[in-house]
Image (cartoon, rainbow, N blue to C red; front, top):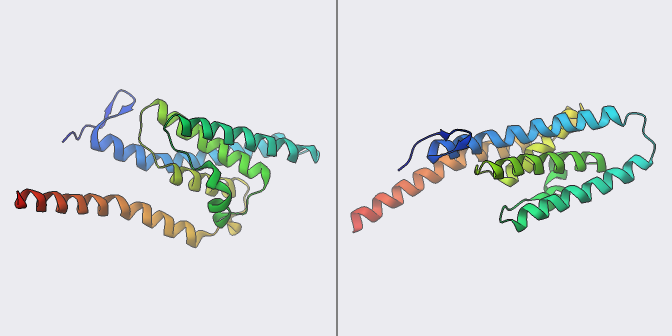
Length: 173
């Protein structure tokens, strides 16, 4: 088994995969936080036409997500509306920022050949948007805590299950 961590900037082995999986959701939240703050700062005096541009931006980021999907890198961008709205109510600008941040993190991970969970990146980017808009009380923190706990428990539980199954198969053979 290869336990190595990194070969330059590319994650390698079990440790590299674990680091990539652990770092990608916070990066999604941070990217969405920075993007929504930047977009809202630039558009603070924008007209209603801004919402139409934001919706067009959502389609562009969705196209990016579709391109990543066709490159065998599955992206849950289309589930942003259903899953994301349970975490925080998204407006068109928020959706654009969340999808854009998610696509950027997933594309970066793909270029580094780093394993990621697209669902975790998308969900954390929605949290980042809620935080970036300074609407902390609108984020459903109970749901976020449950998701975070599930993310933390899933990896060790899966590893333990595989180790037990592997040990059982070795004894059987």
